[in-house]
Length: 129
Image 1 (spheres, rainbow, N blue to C red):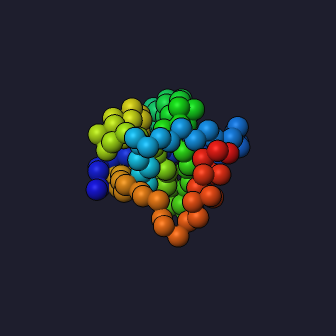
Image 2: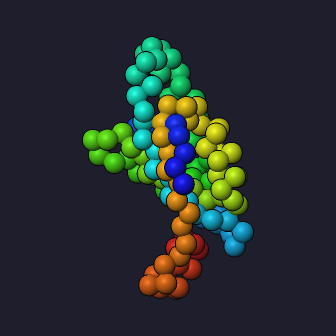
C-alpha cells in the first residue's frame, strides 16, 4: 500500500532506554517507509523548527507506547524506515495521521509476518527482552 505525504524526520537522537515489546496476537507489525516530498523546504526556518519539535514529541510518545518499535534513516536520502505495531491498517493510519510532518511526505506501508526460517525460540526471546 502506498500512501501520500509522510515522514518521521527526527534527526540523530541519542540512544534511549531499551524498547519494550508490546506486540500481542491481536496486532500486526508494519514496515513504513517515509520519503520527504520537498514541501518542508517551502516552510520558513521557524515554521520548520516548530514542526520538527512537535514531530519529536509525537514520535517519542508513539515510541514510549510501543507503537513505533524500530526506526532507521537511509543515508543520504532523508527517507525514514520504521517498524510500527498496530491492531489494523486503519489503526496504523490513525497513528500516522498524528505526525505533524505527515502532509510533507510520501509513505509506503507493508504489513509484515514472521518468517518461518527465524527460529521460534529467538522470536520468543526477542519478545521477552
